[in-house]
Amino acid sequence: MNEEWKEFLSSQSARVEGDRIVFPDASQTATCALCDLGHYGLIAAEGEDVDKFLQGQLTNDIRELGADHWQLAGFCNAKGRMFANFLLFRRGDTVYMQLPAEHLEAVLKRMSMFVLMAKVSLRDASDALVRIGLCGECAPDLLAETLGESPLRPGDIMTHEAVTVLRLPGTGPRFELVGPVERMKAIWTRLAERASPVDAEMWALENIRSGLPVIGSRTAEMFVPQMVNMQLVDGVSFTKGCYTGQEVVARMQYLGKLKRRMYLAHVDSEVHPVAGMELFSETSQSAQGAGRVVDAQAVPSGGYDLLAVLDITAAEGGDVRLGKEGPALEINPLPYAFESEKNTED
Image (cartoon, rainbow, N blue to C red; front, side):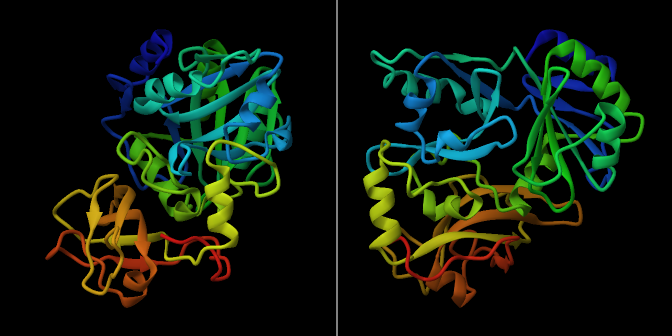
């Protein structure tokens, strides 16, 4: 995280814990919330061959990434398992790939192995640009007052006076703002007049409730994109052509039978579920077990909301548990529909 930005947030009553920002008086039930997103890192991809290079590495069609549209994409191994996934956006001629900061070094090292003779450079740009989040019914009007306008629909993006604004899916209006430190200081100060600063956990909870998977070091290479619903959140193109792992992903889409997918769930537990944690079910016949946690966050009213990749039989049987004799998961509806039963195998 940028040191100047850390000092600024400290002056705003924040406590800095490494790359995490904690606001001691934060309310996780704030209806108009402002969040530092420094727990995410940025990889910048630049150069004459940047689109061609990323087209051969990622699950989505980079040609559709423009000045008015951001996208999600997975970075797979040869077996089609995602080593990482990204929120992708452009600023000028640079493509930025956002991912958990703790996973950035490993991903940057792995992706750099494939550059070879391509005219492209990859670098850690996490300190170059500040990222903040704004969510709540207040957000569109507050952004319009601050910047003059705001993106209308999830997936839209705009850049205004060096600040890039992405409209994200959410239980209500939700935006990410990206820009240089000095500009972002002024914007934070203006937004904080009406929005309440919150911790990163609230932002993660919004991702979970929006059905957006985030792959980090604990879940790297566990899931094929379809297992975490990437095709349902516009994170996979099946018409773009070849990329690493594409053959497996395409075969699972068109020839397989869907045996596991990602669900939104709630669990009342004394144990905090963590990414990669194994789940159990007596009805599951899968060799891979009943499933795994993708991400989980505490809910202010109690318990935990989580995204989990589950064996469909076990999920529909309603007996998936956190631990062999632990509490049962309550499956809740995602904000998007499942596709028809024709997709991926185990």
